[in-house]
Length: 412
Ligand SMILES: Cc1ncc(COP(=O)(O)O)c(C=O)c1O
Image (cartoon, rainbow, N blue to C red; front, side, top):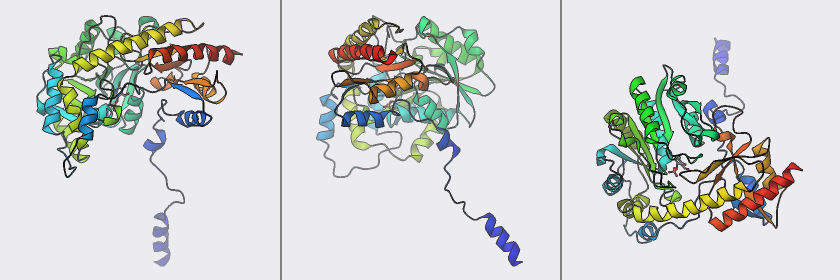
C-alpha cells in the first residue's frame, strides 16, 4: 500500500525545470524590436542612429490630445465601461461618418490600440487551428498575434513588380480550405504602402461572399494616401456589411501611438457580442487616454490632411534617395509610411546587425527592419528590409545617403 502511494505521489512530483507553454516558446520575437538591444548599444557608443525600423512618427502629438491629458481633473481614475466610454464610442461614430461609414455606438468596441482589435477579431472569429488568408508581406504582428491565439495565417504572395497588388481570384481561392474563416487585408498596407483599388476590394468581397468568410480590414492608415489616390474602405461595399470587421486605431493618424486607443467596428451582431465578452474579461480601458482621444476623433481631417502632405514629402525623400543606390529595387508606395526595399545583400538580418555593430559614417548609422518577419513563408524576404519614413525629409535624405555608403562597404 505504502509503495503504491509513493509511486502515485512520485508521478505528481514537480519536474525540475518550470516549463512555459509551446505557445510562448513558438511565438516569434517581433522582427521590428528584435535588434533593439543592439540599437541601445550603438546609442551607448554615442552613434547617431536614424531609426527607420519602427512606425513611430517623430511628429508632435497634437495639443488637443496633450491638453486633455494635462487638464484631466477627476478625483478618481475609475474603471470605464468595457466597450469604451460613451463619449469615445460616439466620437468614433462621428469620425467614421466623415468617411460615409455608418456605425452605431453599439457596433463599436473601443480597444487598447489597433493591436487589441486584431487580438479580439481573430479570437472571436477563429477556433484554434482555423485559418485566415493574408497577403504577404504583411504587418508582422499578425504573425505574433496569430501565434498567441492559435490561428494559422495562410499567406498569398504579392510581388514588388506588381506593386504588391492582389493576385487574381483563382490564386486566392486556391488557398481557401475547410478551415478558412476570414480574409485579412491591410489597406493602405503596412509594410508595402499599397492602396487597393475598388476592383481588388470587390474581388475580396466576392470571394468572402462565395465562401462565407469574414473580412478583417485593418484601415489604420486610411488617410495616408498619396498621388491623388482614393482610399476605399471595406464598408464602401454594402454586400460586405455583415461580414466586414474594421480594425482601427488613432496611433498613426494622430501621431499618438502611446495613447493606445483603437477600435473594432462591425455590423455583425454575433461578432460584437463575442468581442464584448473579451472586452469584459479584460475589464476596462484607460480612462484618461479615452477622454484625450475624443477631440481629434470629432474633427480629424484638418490634422490628417496636414500630416498626409508631410508624409508624401518624406516618401519622396526616401524613394529619391533609394533610386541613387545601385542594386536596390523598390516601388513608390502609394499610402501608409513604409516601403519594402530589396537590397543587394544575401541576408538583411546580418546587414542590419552589421549596421548597428560594425559600421558608422561620421558617427552615424541607420536601423532597418529586416523583412523576413513580414512574410509567413519561410525563406521569403531575406534580402529585403522595411523602411518606415517617420523622420523629416532632410533626415531621411541623409539616412539614404548613409545607407548607400554602408552597402558599398558591406559588399567589400
Ligand atoms: C497595420 C497596422 N495595424 C495595427 C497596428 C497596431 O497599432 P496600435 O496597436 O498602436 O494601434 C499597426 C502598428 O504599427 C499597424 O501598422
